[in-house]
Amino acid sequence: MSANPFSSSSTGYAAIGNYNSSDSDSDGGKKSKKSKHNKGVYAKPSISAMNLKINTTSKRLSCTSFLLALAYLIMFVSVISLHYTITNTQTVSHSEITSENSKITELNDLLQKTIKEISRFNRTVTNGELVDEVKGLKRKIEDQNVMVQEELDAAKGEVAKELASTKAGIDSTINKAQAEIASEVSSVRTKVDEYKSSTQDQFTLENNFMLYQLAGTFTLIGGLISMWHVTSHLRNFHNPVVQRKVLAILWMAPIYSTSR
Image 1 (cartoon, rainbow, N blue to C red):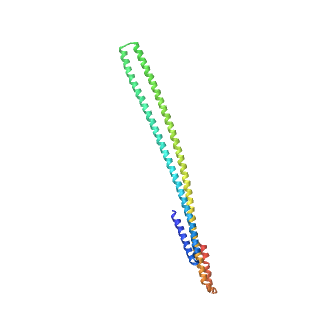
Image 2: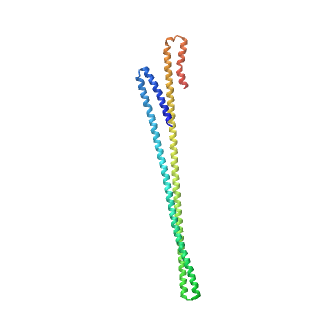
């Protein structure tokens, strides 16, 4: 995109160089060579400064892109770690619940066996001590059932708290990441707009300068041609026809410069 203005500017400088070389033929060569050297020195700092500014802006955009990629990576790692924590917590809770269920099943089996034994003894034996022992066994089983139920309720409460805390952490991390990403995107858009406006202004300035140089060059050439014609017709200046021609030639340069 920057090749066309620079090549056009180089064409403008070449045109001026040709004009200077023609001046060197008419005036001896010393003054025009100095003018050509000065114009070459004037053109180079403008192009190098613009290239330096474009390179600096490109580096800033690359740094911003790197920060965006880093923000995405941090968000991804945070989500993965939180997902791993939730999965691990669910696995531990499921293992505890399975263990408690197995204990309850064993206690129910033991209770069924005890009931069968009690029924058998009731049919065969009528001993008070045996009845008291059976009652004590029932109370023990009931106490164990109550304790297991309490432990199960406590485990469920802890699991619910962990899940709520993990969910809150995930929501906070996601909201923070979204806010950072939105801020970075807005900053990048602002910088791109500024870079675009500055680049367009520079290209417009270079193009206008080239046009002014071309118009001035042609105007000077027209003036030189007019002066040459005036010089060639000085001897016939008393002739009205020649005077009209000379007047028309003299008006060529201002008319051309005004129309351009």
